[in-house]
Length: 295
Length: 277
Image (cartoon, rainbow over all chains, first blue to last red):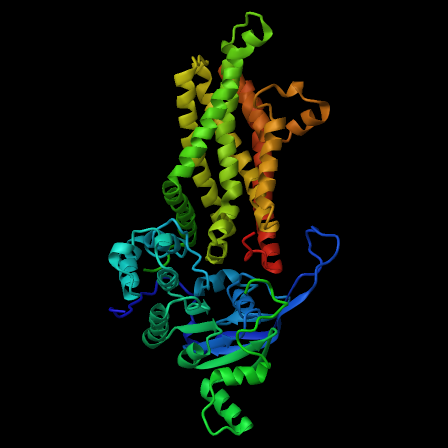
């Protein structure tokens, strides 16, 4: 990253947010999949899978909060609930006090999400993809045209590549374009759903540095899901470990490791992976048989 | 860079979809060329049937009116089918690209999203129809009633709105049925083709299909344009074609938008937005 990130506030967010200290308040959120569908496709009701089970958490303004778990643990489902893309069966998720279901229109103006898939139009260029986002989020078009190259360059994408279709870019570059697209809209809450999964070490480091810079320079609140424990340790102020849809432990990385060290009577500093294995009873690379199916 | 007033913001946002789809059409130009060649070949094949009538029946027949009858049918259908498919496939296309969640997470109303898809569909449909018209004019002698041209275009314009409503309804299918939704839209298109009298008068259809023809806006568009271009254009004939189209539009557009919102809610409740099918 050769340039310092400079963002401009584009989107009109509700007034009075400055006084709200909790960026995200989640209370007893439950999400199930399967069962009898409203549109009856099959005669027999499907098997019910509880993807998120009575989750409550609180993310403070300016915090980088990690949600860790193995594949199928419910991380992405939870992020989708925050992003207004899934309706919870029970409980509430509030973003700066606004309900993600009942006040979704306001919430949408405050958030953006980067998922493990870049979710870009593959044949469009980075510039065209970002201009689409700019128009959807009412970012001033002229200013966006000026800002997009600078934003992409700050993420290490050469100017010459900005006009090329994104399917000609590496996965790491595509993911950086997706992150730039999210930043272009200046979200007050950035949801990063495994943003570095599948990236090469260099791209991974770039993205991680960028997340830290984003918080340092702009006091952005970030909710990050990951199954990379080293990444979580390096980036997160606090984190929760999710297992079978439930939060099994929550705290700062240092707190969690110290607690584990004392409980296990270790004479070395444990890793977050040690903590994870203790609280879930499984390895990180184990997947759940019952998942939402594609987390 | 501060957000604009809400209405302007929504209008600009709907242009996002138009611009995006124009860029996509340019990038997928080879597909567009292939699809256009297919449509032109199909249209010419249909109209050549008129020229073939004397050979088939072994009777001398003045084929000019049949050529014109089928040309109006194929041209109008070319436009309406493009319009319908461009709207109906909007969700399916985003599923295929993997962008549906991104677009539906954006802070725009569903009406804005649908309006953007429809605006592009009209531009796209008109563009394709110009090429088909050019091919027909180069191949056949089309001698239509010039006086009826503007009333015929007015009927097509009003009818487009009715067709948009049905297109929006069809666009909900890929939201509800992640794997087979797109195929279902083709079934709807085929049924509309069958009952609307595109290549024949609806009077040749069996009773039940004739009843079904009354609910298809294409029936009124086709009969209206044919009356204007082949028959005697009159004010009463124009009103007679436009009134049912207005009624269908008043019913189908709000119903389509309501259905779309319901289908989105259903997809968000059941987690179907995520699946790529």
